[in-house]
Image (cartoon, rainbow, N blue to C red; front, top):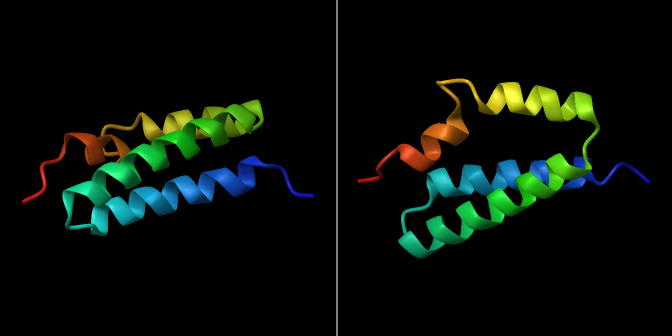
Length: 74
């Protein structure tokens, strides 16, 4: 059986990808909440080196996930 974080992290990134494509506000809210939940769950279950790589990836200034929450949609 593969590690559980390999199941939860792609779901989180898929939810964030759907959030970028959604036009309705309710879908944006639902995908942002579910993506955040699965990202936290996946990072909790991942080994420390995966956690460190994800932290470096997410904390970059040009990171997609950080800009997702501060970018206004028109």
